[in-house]
Length: 167
Image (cartoon, rainbow, N blue to C red; front, side):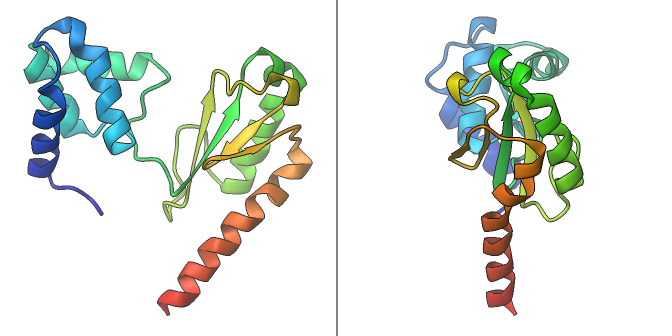
């Protein structure tokens, strides 16, 4: 369900109520907003700018500088590839490339049907299981490009079930 601009503004007013109205609150307020929406809607960033009394471009600059912030809503099944040192050295980049091919999107994007989004993360915390990806809340250890399609099968089956029940 997509929220209207007024609904987003109302939600930001509630979220912001617990923060000081100054620049020091910018990043924590952005983090809380993303926790609430799953990403940072443009309207929310504009409201945050007004609340902490900075230019909207300053909020945009922070959002695009830090990898932790998403400007697009995540897919139904967010796919994250760990690119921490252990995962990177064990083949994380190859997993990213395989996922981009398999999903038909680049990192930072979402599939046209909204089912999958793809992002790189700094560390998942499973270094001894490198390389690691997550799909939703599920962890897939010791991944390789050859295992990517297999890992996606249950999610694709779930999507097909949902489409079949809508018909």
